[in-house]
Length: 346
Length: 213
Image 1 (cartoon, rainbow over the protein chains, first blue to last red):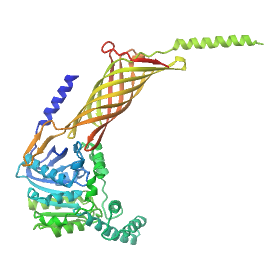
Image 2 (image 1 turned 90 degrees about the horizontal axis):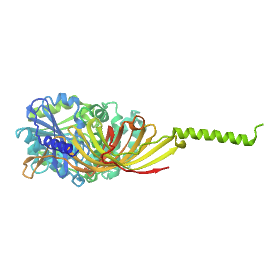
Image 3 (image 1 turned 90 degrees about the vertical axis):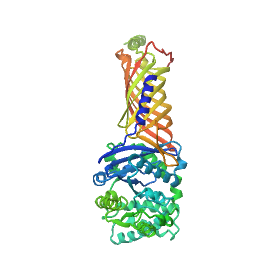
């Protein structure tokens, strides 16, 4: 028994040391980046021969990059460039020990910097990296590009339905909820649901959204994703069902990490956090993409980004059939715009 | 007319006859013995194994229906080594001691429940890198974590020694493995094992305390 255990341990030890780096136009490499008691999974898929990587910074906190790895993106972006799916600490397939105190924007920004360093170490210093931040990932990526000279590690930044200013986000969500509630009630659509939302929004004093109200605004904004006829429905649950086995999801890890991160101090700390005042530091090419019907992170957040950055190359795209999941709702336009942005700036 | 005495005698004879018939059918169960276990362990769809040793320390035999039915409540301690491989996530090697409660029936079937305590060592499912303050990247060898482990499992099986005089049992068991502290929280992993338990009659002979009721 002792011998068997020893042999297994030895085999594992040897196998885990081996560095396997793929090359070519259709790679699939998984590796981990270890920082401050967390080991974060990174999956790189697609065309690494292009020497260009699109790095996902997922939402949450506590969601996962698995949810962005769709067939459409595989066929329409990964065929041209490599895509890096990074699971942040306490998210997705990332693992660790006692690291709750490190779940902060500052540490996560260091994590992100280290992930980029490892990507360059593995695939070559000449590799160009484009970062795309979605939802909470918009905040984290904004923090990254406004920290020291970190933006120099990137060729471009894509703000996709991201939130870089939580108080502004709450105000815009409230304004849009009122606008659409009145419009939809007039059209006699989902009248009771929209009336409840309208009544709630009218109880909020302008410029004084409390933490509890902010959470409720977010819940209402999420609920509205199924209220519009114009929005193409999407389902993260459907994506999980489809890909859980083929992409080897650690399901319980995803669920428990999400549960932990969603109830962490980070969410409370972010409630009144904003980076609009620091965006002037940004000089790299920037693309913003928001869903027209995204009430979780309304499109006017993109206007604020464009208004405040110092980049000479900047553009805005509105996804016409999308709410918060534009990569699944307007996938054709989404991929086309990403590919154009990378091709122009790589 | 049948007298009361005749009725009493007939009743006595009938009861005596019935009782002796029951004595003839009285069933016994062999005392539990030290055994080794080996199982294929599936963690969701990911393969693994579990091997271990089981040592009984107490058996409570309960007779029912005047001995025509007997149940043995076996208590044992087990020590196991388990492993599963979840590609691109982690490999997990664990040492687990379980406190096993088994209810063995006279027809050979049994069911069991076992809480357990142990330690787990994971090995991450890919090359793991660290980056120092000067941005130097290096590989972390045998990267992974050591966690405390708690488990709950239950299952059922068939003991071939009861009716067929073969010294082994087959069993199926589902478990929940809890590992902590995991990302400052807990990690939960369901497993299913399909295994064989082989009775050792001479090696590490156990003398479990027998209680009859």
